[in-house]
Every structure is written in structure tokens, then in C-alpha cells.
Amino acid sequence: MALYMKAAEILEKVAQKKGAVKTLVYDSKFQNIKQLFALVCETQKYSSVLQEIINSTKLLKETKLRIHLAKVLVYDLLIGHGVKCGGTWKTMMLKHRSRLQAALARIKVKRKVSRNQDLLPSSFQQTRDDVIPRYVRVNTLKTTLEDVIDYLKREGFSYQGTACRLEDLNHLSGKRFLCDLHLQDLLVFSAKTAFHNHFLYKAGHIILQDKASCLPAFLLNPQVGSHVIDACAAPGNKTSHLAAMIKNKGKLFAFDLDAKRLSTMSTLLLRAGVTCHQLANQDFLKVDPQSSEYKEVEYILLDPSCSGSGMVCLRDEVSELQDEGRLQALATFQLRSLNHALQFPRVQRVVYSTCSIHSQENEDVVSACLQQNSAFRLVHLFPNWPERGHEPFTECLRASTAKTRTHGFFVAMLERRPPQTDEENLLVITLPSGGEEKQDTHQSGPSDEELENTETANEQPTNSVSKKKRRNRKKHKKQES
Image (cartoon, rainbow, N blue to C red; front, top):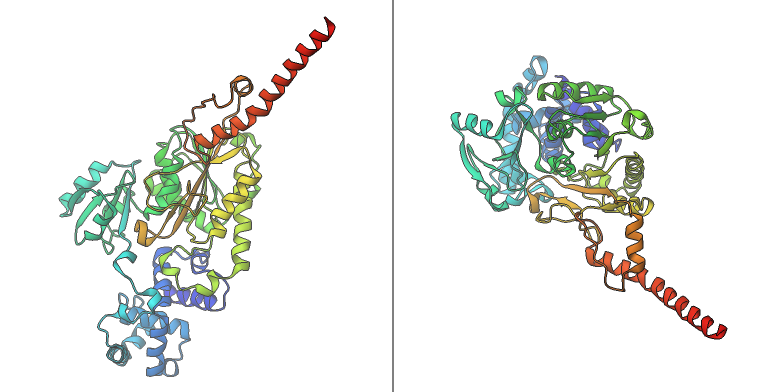
């Protein structure tokens, strides 16, 4: 009963434009966030169909239910997995089930379709490219990839090896599964494979996490034993991934403003076997970068609040996502957070990520940050990744259902530029024009050729001035003689 009440409350707030679905769900402090999020998203997708069914059966008049509560109940009764509550609501819905089913059948006949999903608006019609597989990250703090594969094979799953191309994911069905072609320790199953009640999930041996969400920690790649910050940590999947990357050694500082979400996250981290973390119910923007507590921090993962426009189930929030005022407010906050992350004195790498498709929250934020922080540069990430950031920020990554079989996502990594030594400065002055070659082990924003051109341009005026001084000295000696 609490599930339906909370879902109806969130749908009403969304209709009143009081927030995004994702934000409202996580702020609800509901015990089972994933269940609530799925119910709200699916009910919203079928909203127009549910409204038509409710109107034709006069359900509101006969039951005295409010419209949003009626929608979630009718959705679960007719399209979902059945009404999950007991008591008067379940009795009421079962009483009207025959009439509601008949109304749904009439709509299908009228529109000449046979499947429920064919009733969805065109913006929700899923093609093969829209289907996101089930991704399972192996938690290496508790087990190994090989052990998980062996366990699943003993349960009747069929291991197909490592995917060679993205198209291989299209052919997964039943109990067949693959190793991902890009990310180590990531397994891929057909979209409808359920793991929430599986032993490996309940024991914390596997983490149910979208592939795109695994990118930030994987690309940050902190060294074992290092000090790391997860700036906006809840719900905690990226935090547990970071802990696995550093093998529970070093320190992992995790911040989040919501005490309830932080409490839930603590339980998740405990189940995942994370022991190197230090949780803080604190605004990251108020964390002092000069504090001695963070003097050894070299890596920061920043995944701040965003529009959530990359989440597949939120694609219908068109009016909200096109609200330029709200996007600008989010971008301002994101830029402040990214600038703040770069203030930590020993930080070497900062990964910035969002689950947004909007340039205002992605490339525009990175561009503004680089202009304000000349000591940092972009790192060219994953050269073989199929989707890049918008020009000219192709060093960054984007993700989407069609091109990467994931939710929409954006990832950029900023790296501190190495300090230029006095010896390097001397080389720039004394080497002949065009004769300098500087090795750079990092793939970053400017190419080696661009760096060489810049350095050559810097050399030429200096050499010209030196030659002029030598001519003046010779002329002066002749005059003296």
C-alpha cells in the first residue's frame, strides 16, 4: 500500500512540475527505491492509455480514488505484475478487474494492435536499438569473475565467452550471457534476466549496475592504496566500484547531503564488503580542500545532480527537460562542483560524469571549467569507444541506447598538467625552430603536433631577439675599433 501511495504522490508532483522523477524518487526516502522508480516510470509511460481506461470505466466515480493512485493501481493490475498490496485496495481492484480488462481489450482492437507496448506513444516505441541488456558487475572485493561464471554455469546459465562487437549483445536470450567487450568484470545478460532475489546479489558478490554507470570509476582508475573522493556518492554503486579498484586499501571519502540515502548506502557498502570508506553527511561544496584530512587525495569522482535526461524511462519529461532555466541552474551547480574538485592541492585526476544528454550539463560545463583552470587538461578517454563527446570535446565519452546499448551518459576526465621544469624552459629557448620533440605519455586535449606548433611559435620570437642582440654586439665592437 505504501508503494502505491508514494508512487501516486510522485506522479502528482511531476505533473505539477515540482521536480524530476529521478530526484523525487530518491528524495522520497522510500525503502525500495528501485521498485518505486520502476513503477513510477512505467505508469508514466502508459499514462494516456491508463487515463482512457479509467475514463471509459468511470473508475474514479465508483471507487473515489484520486487519478494518480488509480493509474498506478490499474497499471499494476493490467500491465505490471499484479496488485502487490492486500486489504481494501486489492479487493476493490479485483472487483473491477473484468471491466478494466475489457476496456484495455477494446482499445487494442480499436488501434489494431495485440501487445500492450504497441499502445505506447511513438516516442516510447522500443526498437531493438532501444533495448538495454542486463549488466552485472562482479564485485572483486568478494569474489572473482571466474568464480561467478562457474557458479552461474552450474545453475544452468550458458556462458558465451567475451563479446567481440556490440551487435553480439542483440542475440542474448534466455540464460545465455557474455563478458562485456569494453569493461573488465562486467557480465551481460538479456534485458529481462532477474537477479534481485539471486544469492549472488543478496550476498554482495554481484552489483546490478548499468554499463555506462561503471565508466567513471573504471576510467578514473585510482591506484591501489590511494586516497579518493566520491563527491556525490549516493546511492553507492560507484563508491563500491572505487573501493574494488583500490582493493579496499587507502582511503575513500564519500559525501552526500541526504542522511537517509547515506544510511541506505552504508548498508549497500557493508553488503559489498567495502571497508576503506569514510561516509560524511555533508555538502561537497562545503568541504575544505586545504584540510589536512584530504592532503593526500589524488583522485576525485564527481557525478553531481543532473536532469536525468539520459535515463530511458524519463524520455517523456519533454517539457521539463526543455526548461532552459532549470538546465542553466543545474549547469551552474555542476560547474561550481567541478571547479571545487580542482581546488584539492594534490588532486591529479577528476572524472566528471552525468546521466544527461544535454550539452549544457556536459561539454559546456567542461569548456567553462577548462577556461577557469589552466592547470588542467582533458584526457582522451577510451579511443575505441563508439560514441564521443560533441565537437570539439571528442576526448570525452557519450553513451546512448542506440550506439552503446546503455542509458544516456557523459564522462570527461580532467588531469593536472605536469609542471614545466627549468630545463624544459631552457630547451624551448635554445633549440632551433622546429627542432623540439617533447614526449607526452598521456592522451589529452591538445595533440602532440599542436603542442609542437605552440612551442615552435614560442621559440621563434626568442631566437629572433637573440640574433638581433648578437648583431648589435658585433656592430658595437666594430665602432669601438
